[in-house]
Length: 282
Image 1 (cartoon, one colour):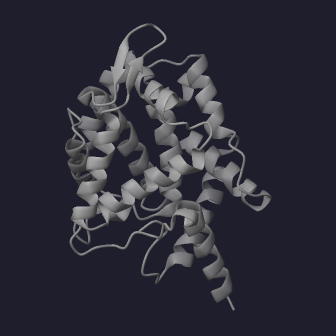
Image 2 (cartoon, rainbow, N blue to C red):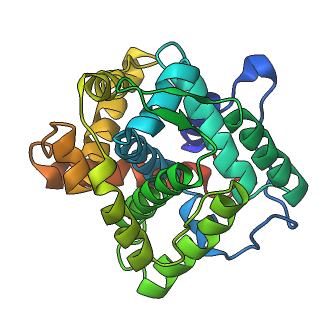
């Protein structure tokens, strides 16, 4: 009786992450990936809901750095193609986590080639380059901590300190291949690095415009609107307090209700994908 519902959910999620007009399909998990079966990073990156919540929180946190925001604002066309950016990011994470190592290294090389073409001038007249190792370190640290905290909140609240450190060590391998420096190898190092970046972060008219672009993005359909609104609220709730405050955002009304409903979505999608050969994006 429930099989059609399960198949419909899987189909809908895969349609979100894979552009069928380009022939995109879920990336198969390889036995010869950068990270072996059982790796913490494969566990964290394999959950659809927590990665979506963590991904939105990560993006809003990352964009508080004016150079990171400028790179996206000036070069990505994010205002016109938010879904495309979501898909590209999700596929990069999937292929570098689960895909064959040759595909993973090719994806990393492609991103580095794109970074080499991204640069410009900030509104204050200072320059920026996407190849800047320090800037790449910020993007990595702010992303990793939100992905991990999304997993802890909606999948594994009892995750050990050791596994959290292993996640940073493993995700740091990809960051180093992208030429980020320094790269934290433990949670404590990541938190310390984020504190070091705090004086460089800014909230201004462009930051607020980007925030609204993300949080007020129109849903793909009316049916998806309630879930999208819920996931946005969960993302704001998940963000580090300093990032939420800089964006002028408040914790959602009744956080326990937001978290409970989001956990319900997460459990439903895990049920839908149980036994599938591939998950949503891999």
